[in-house]
Length: 402
Image (cartoon, rainbow, N blue to C red; front, side, top):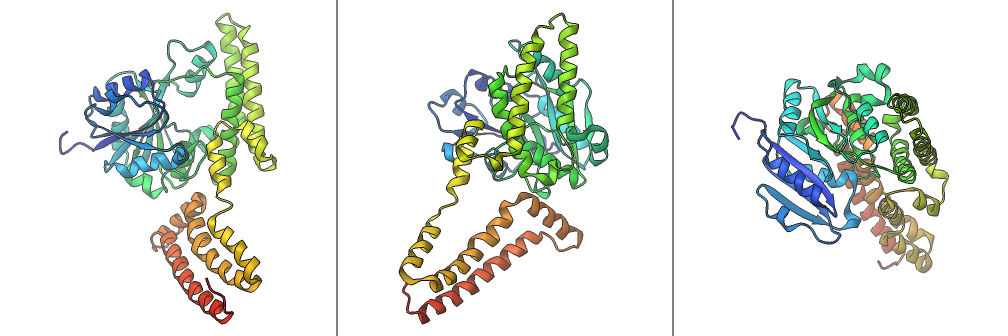
């Protein structure tokens, strides 16, 4: 790589990778634009192909299934890399030619305000008619750079971005807050939304092409759209301002016309089954807070996410507090509870709440105060130390041994 060229790395999360994954890595090594390192973050489950680990430029890390998160795992890859541009791909997307990386990089270099660029997805040869048209609808032949000014015209598609194959500038990625560290799905659109709202741009690059498609059943569509709606509900700062249902109806009507035009109107019945699955999953996902845990696990395609989320409820600290109440009464409990509130809730919740953190960061930059979240975390830690000292003195006066 020339010194003048922008440094580029690739990050690929994997889970039970197959032959298509090996083809992906080989195709990346054939790219005309030089790639520094291909970081593979593999979720342990069975055998990982040794030939991939032995390939040039490839670095493989293995994580446990409980550690995987769509946002946090990809952010881990971003932190592993030191490149100026990082391309994220999924294990089942194969570059259509040797110009994918170069075309993405070119668009990012042309405009300093463009923070992300994603590739066009072409349907595989074994893809059904409905999925082929869906790919064509969502990934047209013409490229486009999207900004905040396009919201009225494009609606939810303004925020669209796909980590099937997407490149991000490191500096803008960090300014926008990066990928959510805890997300069930949709980490790419959430980050793209934060970029758009912060005044940056997201580019769709039709010249960068990857082969990627699925023949989902109606039930699989149900599970996917449930998780999609949950992610949107959890991030109202992005998705509350605009509806995604109108775009869905536009796709349905357009697909019906297409099926009739190619002489296959009987496939409209299959389309209807998929639409029912999508709509039912989406509506339930929007109302997930009203569902029981058992119902949620039946609806989701990400049970591990929910189990991690729910298991955070009862920590060792909380068990300890319960024992304190039983042994020493409520006075000791309130002292320790105050310490716990400052130590865990104040700093941690500020960091976990991506929307709040992004807004506070933007506000801090506007008033020239820098990253205000960091200052608040420091204040929270100082307060925690003060409360710990006061709590300890209180417990000593109460003759309580901790």
